[in-house]
Image (cartoon, rainbow, N blue to C red):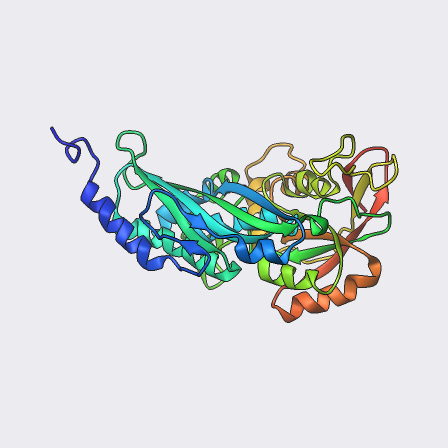
Length: 357
């Protein structure tokens, strides 16, 4: 018995790597290329331009949204999701993504399918100005079902320490600005798959499965440009846990100094809470359809709390900034194709949290 008979096709792996190499992009900062034992990236340009450069990293995956891609046989968007989940996280601290690496695992490798997934990764990297520096493709027969893939990613970005956004500048009365999502993004799909079993159900002008595969919006370039115009005091990427879990995270740790040695309490002993105005933005139809599916499934679920504790509800990123900068920020974002609404404000409270009014 050889390795191929055991289920691992080395030649197919070589073919996949050749396809990845065609998708990668190189800059003067990249040393070496795809296929080496490690990726190398020069920081010379950035270290010269910043007083105290800090590397900021993040890692994430796509989760069970992948099942929708397999069933719809559409593989070229989940790679964008993987990039977005990582770079939008580090963006919350003001980081510019430098490079990205991916990890692709499967039961039986099909180089064409793998290349379609990595095509999405490469597309996402190009959109945010990051380099696809390398990755790993693992073929694990008997561990993953044939035809199933998993993908995760890792990004490293950079910011000048004095410009890092960590919530310490948040003040009472700061506005909360919500940036439109492109759809469900990449969270809550274990629930979605239960309440929307028929992916060919008509939804507008397409099957609902394709609507669910709309890739996660990449906020990097519009927000980095906005940072040149206004001061952003805090940011939250609305991912798993929805509003309730993610928005309070922008306040930092209100009890202990953070890694920068700065308290999240913003020079006072009272924690912040986010006050969200009901009806301040329009919830996308796809989320109304999911809510209907949950309701139809029965039970005594508090549907509003469940939805806002699971999904982005049409708001993919929330930022805290001065009331005086709200209109300037909205105009800037809309000029770059992103709708934004003032969805609430920051107030003092007994504990860090979130409430609706």
